[in-house]
Amino acid sequence: MSYLATERCRLYYEDTAESDPSKLSAPTVIFVNGWAVSSRYWKPLVEQLAAHYRCITYDQSGTGKTVIKGYTPNFTIEGFTDEAAELIEHLGLHNSRKLHIVGHSMGGMVATELCLRFRDSLVSATIIACGIFEETAFTSIGLFLLGGLIDFSMNFRNIFLVDPLRSLFIKRAATKEISKEYRDIIIEDFTQSDKEATNAVGKFSIDPEALRAYTRHVLEIASPVLCCVGMADHTIPPEGTITLYERRKVESPSPTRLAKFTDLGHLLMLEETAEFAAELKKHFEFAEQFYKKSPQERVD
Image (cartoon, rainbow, N blue to C red; front, side, top):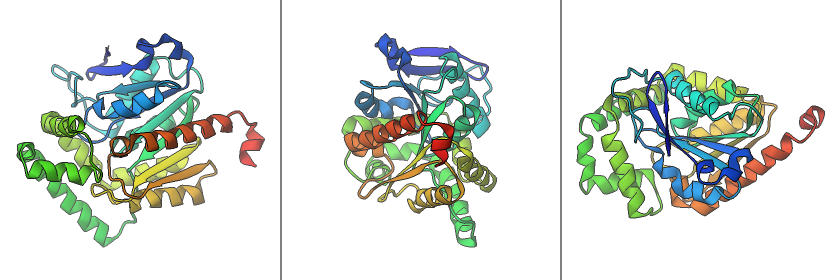
């Protein structure tokens, strides 16, 4: 458990190599959080992966233990990418090709930018529940209404501390039952996150220009990509992740896989941790073998 002082915050992060120095040379996974949540929700997944991988989690500015008081961070995709990039460089993870980047929900947008910045260090990318949608009048109306819901949620978010709205909030995020510990964490993080940061993230996550850039940039990732989706996701329609996968399969020469979880929701890493960890391990191992091939073999 450490802090990294940057121009935008004192960034809180956890590195499994701190307690197990033997993992300093191991393949490394950095996890990028979703909207209005700290890095605590990755813990069960990290426990599944830590025997084989060095795992890095961190609290984005505006969440968890990261300190923004006295700083003036810009809450944009570029700003969140900058702080994660400083952490990657601080830990020396950019010096060799052994980096796996995993992004969840809004974090998929930040993860994608990191993949492009560190393309020479990247082994694989995993995008969880962060899809793309065809631009139609219907989706434009949907995004407009979602923007209104974000405003309402942020102005009255303490209502989610008590039932029945507390239970409804959790059921919207997780279709399968998750432990009380993590139900409490999800609610606590959402209600205690910095309001300005949380509102900004909610808005850029549905901004048409940001979504167009995200689509272009996912297609540019040269390393293997795994798209993960819970088909019972009530937070972000699962069709968006499937569309993203299909676009990459057609337009990108690099390997792309899709992992569909039939009865899971938005929090795959908490709803079925062991099953989800197994999919990640399979993807990481595939990507590592991909980079052991010659450039010509990768094309073939």
